[in-house]
Amino acid sequence: MSLISKLEFYKSYIPIIVILAVSPFCTLIFNITEYELPEAVLFEDAGLGSILNLVIFLSVTIIFGILLIYLIKKPTILKFFSITLLFYLTFTTNMFYIDAIICQLNINMLYQLIIEVVIPIILSIILVLSIYKNYYYIYSTIILFVSAEVGVLLNMVIPLITKILILIGYSIFDYYSVTRGFINKIFTANPSTTFLDLFLIRFSKVGLGIGDLIFYSLLVSLSIDILSPNILLGYLISSLSIIVGHAINLSLLLKRKLIPALPIPIILCLTLIFIARSLIS
Image (tube, rainbow, N blue to C red):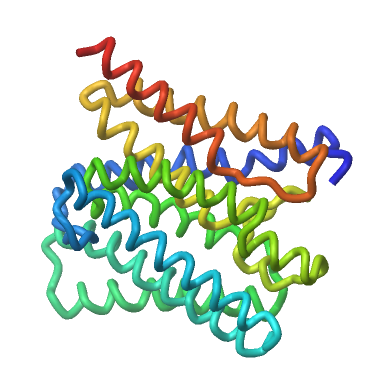
């Protein structure tokens, strides 16, 4: 992309603004309700254990990338697989949030179960229909909110050291996958491929990956937790880092068709967080 108009520049911030607006509220839901979530790691969050947890997360991602490369020659199966994955992600994520809220209310167990299942199913069905009907804005809106929810969930179920390693590790992985890895190979092999559109949130000519926005949401939620009780400071640091990082990414996009969206915002945010934490301490 050689040129980004002012309108496209501002519209590209829509997903960023939504993530920055929704993530604090999602974090607040779990902090207020004290909803218990199991840790999503196999090893203790210390030393070698944290590194092994990172290796497991990266391994799953690499396997997923290899599967996508394999299925790219089978578009029907690939589309079915992608839609099934997004349906499952939308359904399970919203179940967690609704359950966290409903558990605080004095509601009959049967009604509680119905609400927890019906609303996520309706959202998931709307998502699938929007894909088949090419209602891209509806699809992007639903997935955008789900991305914010997933990022906060990850912050809640992954312990601190592992989270920081994951943010750093995935920044490096994102850079590699876009410049030399499986994302680069997909575009090199078939520059006109459209299946990745299912994993992009696009309100302008500039698209952001679902994974990028999940990590942005994780970054916001993590910053709030690390700098608590200075919640506002944590929010401002993460917001500033993501907004500035996105602007830098857009400037790089003037010279390239594809860039890694994670490294700059994550490096900025983690650096500022640790500076602020050191000064506060």
